[in-house]
Amino acid sequence: MTGAAAASRGPSFDGAIAFAQDLIRIPSLPGEEETLARRVVAEMEALGYDDVWTDQLGSVVGVVRGGGVGATVMMSAHLDMVAAGDPAEWEYPPFDGVIADGYLHGRGAMDIKGPLAIQTHIAAALKGGAAGDIVVAHPVFEERGGWGMDHLTRPDGGLRPDVVIIGESTHGDIAIGHRGRCEVEIIAHGLAGHASAPERARNALDLVPAILAGVHDLAARQQSDDVLGAASVVATGIDAVPASLNVIPDRATVTLDWRILPDDTVETLLARVRDAIRPQLERMAAGGGPAGGGGVDGRPDAANGPEHAGNDTELPGGVEVRAATERQTAWTGVEEDRLILSPGFLMSPDDPIVTAAARAVGGRNGNGTPARVRPWTFATDGGWTCGVRGIPTIGFAPGEERHAHTNTERLALDEALWGYGRYLDLVPAVQQAVRPASGS
Image (cartoon, rainbow, N blue to C red; front, side, top):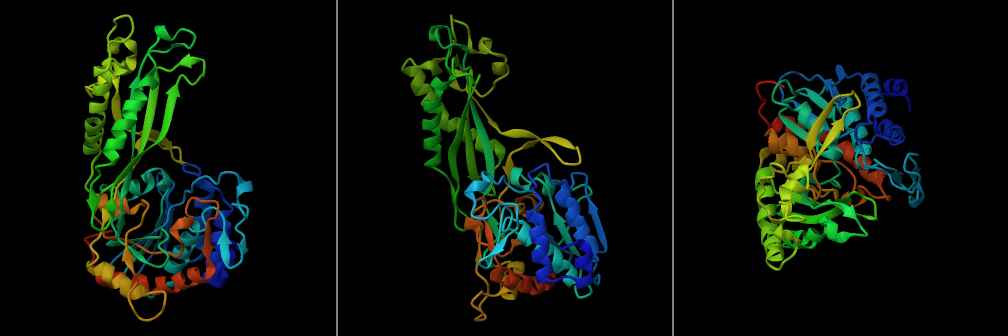
């Protein structure tokens, strides 16, 4: 359905699903969201939003003005998606937006283009009936650490709503938080050489067993939260360079995926990694292994490569620990080196916003009980809005988390219809449950 058709029919559930089909047909990997962003802008304009724009990074923001006496609610669903993988592994093509067997199928159906379309239409449906402004902000780069939301809610000139509703799928529950995620790199250094003469080299891979043993020890003593559960850390990759298989590598990087608790900081995480792997490296060194350092031909570790200069980790064998970063480039051309970090957050189950939301949504069985309140298992942009900026944040959307990032991704249409109707009550309920801040 085109934007013009959306305008002529007005906001509706059927229009939202047709819009979601359009969105699924537009691949939008992080940094490649331009075509999708322009399609979302067109839909907001066709639906009669009062203000629509894209920010410096290409995130889309639309505003539906309210009566001016209520709180400002921001609904948010990110623009980017994860890769689809091999299309042959899908039951339905990942970018066709097929509707079959009562489901909308495809990459983004429930993570997160289906909920994005619903939120976009809901704001328009509430125009003229909301006490306060409704901001719909769909950011870029959520899948790679949340650069878009970090920028949208920056302290200097960013959005400052009174409450945020994240449109990540909850299967109809009210989500109140999640663990965060941080990528950590452990780098073992050696000296490259021809594989035919290993005595002339120092193999960085020889340090990996001690590093993995330390990671195993670290994983066994993770902290826990009564609501969010235990943090978890696991090695998810080992990369060696040079990559040629007839060359002894001088650098091996072990990458950790760490699901962290809201109070964790990068500094404390890195210190805990060092404390965990140091004993294993020292044990290897005491046994005459490569962690003893000293390099080749009596040269010190610092002489074995420029990477060692200034290494203040004081770990045996020239091992260093750092938070992973990547150069991210927005579709607008803006570049920034970013930590691969999604903060965690947790709202109290007794917060008035949470209880109002649970009552407004209700259980899916329709017996008048409040919706279930629980955390997500995965990380969302709520870590930025609530965990970092302190803005009360909840999550609500149709869809089952088990389908996220899989080749079975789908959104049940009956649940989506139910969720559309519940959003019409949810937004006014949370507006009434908060006291407006000094500005937005």
